[in-house]
Length: 285
Ligand SMILES: O=C(O)CCC(=O)C(=O)O
Image (cartoon, rainbow, N blue to C red; front, side, top):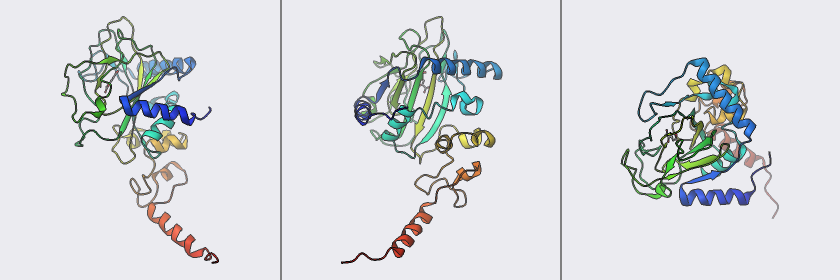
């Protein structure tokens, strides 16, 4: 796949900074949308997943967590090149995957309470993006079937929404194959599904590399499964050290547990630089 042109990336970044969200329309090929939907149905049936048990998660919603452990067909989702390039530009290249789950809204699902995704963190607002949700539409998102309801620009407010508050929202309608990226500080909620059909979606949630992930992916994904991931996916799942310092195991990069060569710690890298400098002959005046 061609890299995203710099001008396109810059436009998405500007839209995201202004509105707190941006929709990458018709990004995913229909065949991939079909494949992911088929994978969700297989996993749901194989493991007998049913509706969620809490009103927040949705009493008529099937949410499947830890998708990477359940089916290989989800492995490409966090690595989608255009989304990952944008998320790397908005956070940094050492970001992590925070969680990957499905959001299948069944008929009769009521609108979710209004919230923001990092509401629990004791941090002042407004703040630069710390975490971003990439909402993959695997069905057309319509007002009737529960398209996510958002409050554009609310990421800039100095307070979180009163949980469940009734405020004016906009339905983030988009066609299947589109991906909406939104700042975790954006006020939002899932809409009500008043149709007879399900609304299929994936929530691929990314966060800064120094943050605790929403799902504990290092423990939740069996080691032998993670060992088969592409290296970038292993890093995103937390088999990596942030800035050569955070997340090491006895000074080793945890990716070595998966049979990969690790990166040096910041302390090793500093000594290497000093050694190289000492070995470089002084330049002639
Ligand atoms: O399903 C949706 O559209 C939104 C879900 C959501 O915001 C959440 O579960 O945090």
